[in-house]
Length: 190
Ligand code: ADP
Image 1 (cartoon, rainbow, N blue to C red):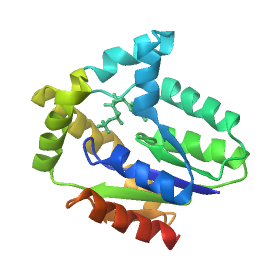
Image 2: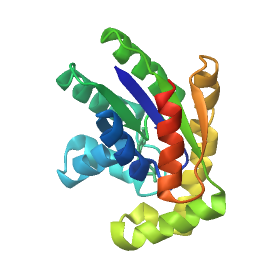
Image 3: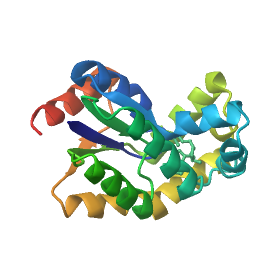
């Protein structure tokens, strides 16, 4: 199985790039942001709880995110592989992912980190906010909080994966196609 962690700050283009990787390597897409937004739309208990964090630019509680991932992995044991988009975002989530994958007898193949300048991130998110309608995409202070939380809670995961020789840095500036090409090139060598 090919299990990719697509990593990078909010607005780095993870969702856009995930589409190219899914198509090329026939993977199942697991975006915790999308899964959480479906829970919110369905007004489930998990969705209602997560929304209060997400709207302010904080991370949803680990237990919610981990239980969503767990049920999808259990439903698709025969998949070709997965692309984890926006997950893990904390060290606790990374540990949980390792345990879940170990139970399936397959490890994380690689972690691909998109590197994008902060000014460009804010520009991209505000632009996306016009069409996404997401409350967390429309306010600069909330966007800055998301970037701050990324630097504080999520970025340390680069050390976790780099200690296992699974960390790959990808330049996330340039055209969508150029970036997709860089990603596909790196994944092809895994
Ligand atoms: P972006 O990458 O632009 O932040 P996402 O859709 O991945 O967009 O995430 C939106 C929000 O959903 C995050 O700010 C956070 O509140 C919540 N979220 C998504 N994934 C996770 C996760 N793995 N752990 C905790 N919260 C998450």
